[in-house]
Image (cartoon, rainbow, N blue to C red; front, side, top):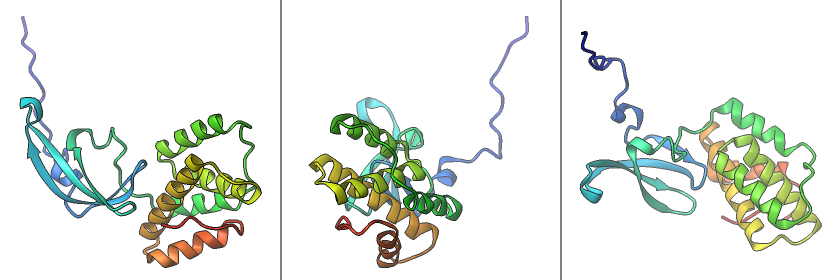
Length: 183
């Protein structure tokens, strides 16, 4: 009877410190752009766990994320220049047909924002900005528009190495002439 054993760990497999180094800029769909500022070992419920300390920009918050679940929770590296340019192109396209009721629209936009897909986030920003030009948005839709704007601005700033004002100017030039959300 042959015994089976676990295969040896690969030396080329990245360690968590290499995967999430301190100083790494990250994006989380629910929070926006942030920077890993530390790693902290804690024992919740007597289970050893390492947490990433991430400082987010808009809104300014510091959050602890379990390191082994960071990817599963949506934390990822920011988009590159090609993906950002595709998202900017979405802003120039006509708005998509959305459902009539505000609740189904809200649910659709929430799903797009949580996906973290930059083109979907750009769609939310484009559609809500166009809706705002026609009629007043509900508070939840204004909040989603601000979240989409901040996410896109942060990704744009990082991918093209711009300052906040430059990224904001690019977005405002691509959006219809309505009041751009204040950060």
